[in-house]
Length: 114
Image (cartoon, rainbow, N blue to C red; front, side, top):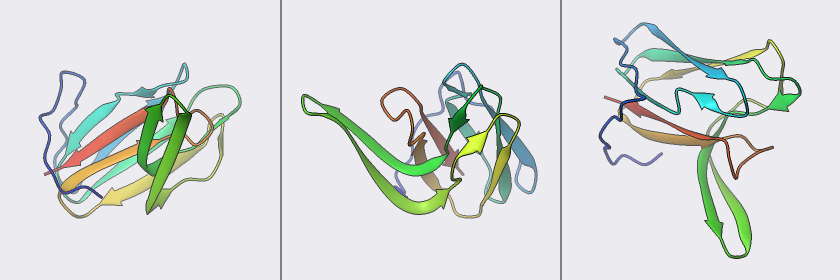
């Protein structure tokens, strides 16, 4: 977890603490890619693509040598098939980047918890 703050972009959807928020996995993307929620919110990712995707906390670095991933251990869904969901309750404020382990070069997202 990176405790730095970031400005929510226009793709952010605010949600009140103690409630739920949703991210769709569709067209090889997390929608919305960024989401701002209050501490205590449970975020649910719903996999709507054919095949499998994952929701894994951590960072992706892209360089001349390719893509490298750095999992931080905060959450990890495992492979999600079409129609499956993964839920995680965000208790602590901070910034939580995440990615799909199958498609790390293109599928990335971020949850900001206030």
